[in-house]
Length: 123
Image (cartoon, rainbow, N blue to C red; front, top):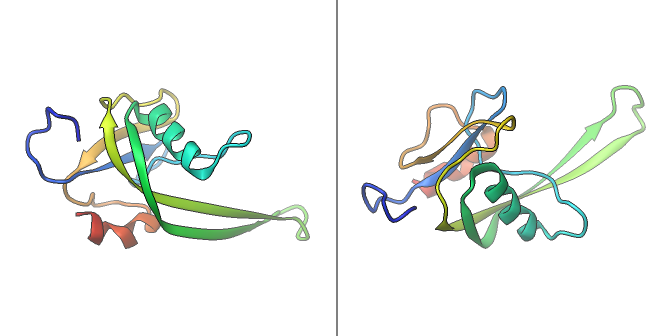
């Protein structure tokens, strides 16, 4: 949390994506030869203007998407979720990408399912 935070209670940075009604974690796709760690640090800063350092991943999630047009075409995805530590910056969302971003001391009422499993450990 920034130094000017009102108290020392741990907080989690969450985002509200464009058109979304549930809070989630910043995230995005890898570019070029980026590692998952480099991608995460870049995306958090691009989306929220907050700089962070990463700890170990706390969740790896695989998914497969099947094309509606061609049932033989499949896309395999790997989602990597990291714990992170605040380094600097104040929230300033990326225009056109997000509807909001905020620090939470308690879980928000509406949260993406992938984040709900971890929320008990965060708060």
